[in-house]
Length: 241
Image 1: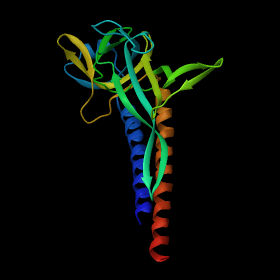
Image 2: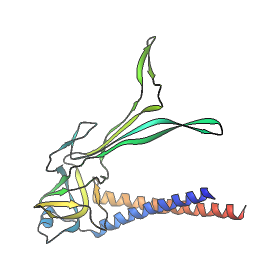
Image 3: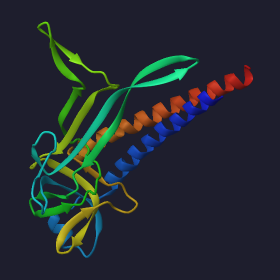
Image 4: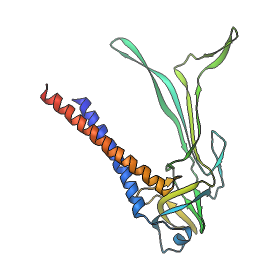
């Protein structure tokens, strides 16, 4: 009975993911688009959308750790691939696994500039949808040995190698940001809003809305099918012995 219950929980998770996509899309449809000038002339913080080009924050441009490229934001990750050994029924079974050993997001804020001014986006580790993947490489472990004129990779450990991945937002990248905007320390600032999704994307509002709609349908349909299948499985096991 455990396996159908696990499938049921997976279905709920997929359904919940679809709901989150709908929530983001509904928030986009209900949120006004403001310019930096309009935000600056307002009486207080407001949840809104801002569209413009990415610019460095007060600390200036940053350097991506793996590619060395200049950018305003980056996310870098290192995963290790290794062999996992376990013993069952007196026999050793070996599987290849991966786990993340380093996950870093640029800590400094960046700006978004439109025709009327600039606003500082305090992302605080939030992900950036559609960021450009600047590095994706796998480096096998071990060392090359020349044996009778042949280059052979020699590795005596369970570690098979490391995967390096990096995503960046370069200066000038068109941006769409939905968040809570206002004036902080005489600086127009946008940060995560209370009770609403915080969306930072390199896609246009139209592109992002269409992508979220597709994801929403996939989540609802896929989750529903998985849940229905798990219930049928449970019924068969319960009444079929």
